[in-house]
Length: 179
Ligand code: AMP
Image (tube, rainbow, N blue to C red):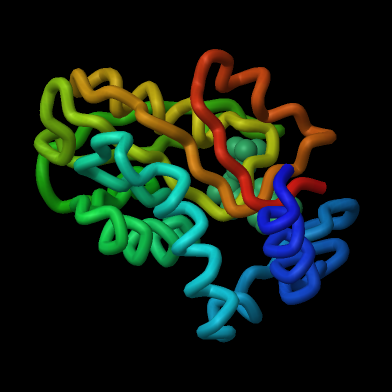
């Protein structure tokens, strides 16, 4: 990691709030709301992602419900790309494509509008936390179902001990903060 990237990572880490035992015992929730409320730090993180993918030909930035929306929108503006929301089942009004992924107990389903990504389009997938990688892997599958190309997976935080990268083999993953 470069000195600049490390300085940014340390700054962001100092602003993100750990909330132990949320939403259930044993989980340390990474609360990014203090970071969203900090104009200077939020601007820096958006610029860091935009720099990482500038020149990659990205035409759509895909945000994963719900905190992913807050990151995807300004990154898309900075890259001159469109924004695509990926939502939990049943929330999108038009025709959708769906992908299911395993949770600790049972499965969950994410959906995207079927015309949100065109064949051959380069897509950046964005979320706040990469944990086990199940969510991001399902979203990459959705992009590819529509014939899109995953140009990268941009995650603000990567929980390395959960080895989410193993579910995203071969993908270009860029995380600003690692724990
Ligand atoms: P996963 O599919 O396990 O990679 O989980 C990723 C999704 O769960 C993301 O949408 C995150 O927002 C959320 N998530 C998982 N672990 C945490 C955590 N410790 N703090 C905050 N959000 C989390």
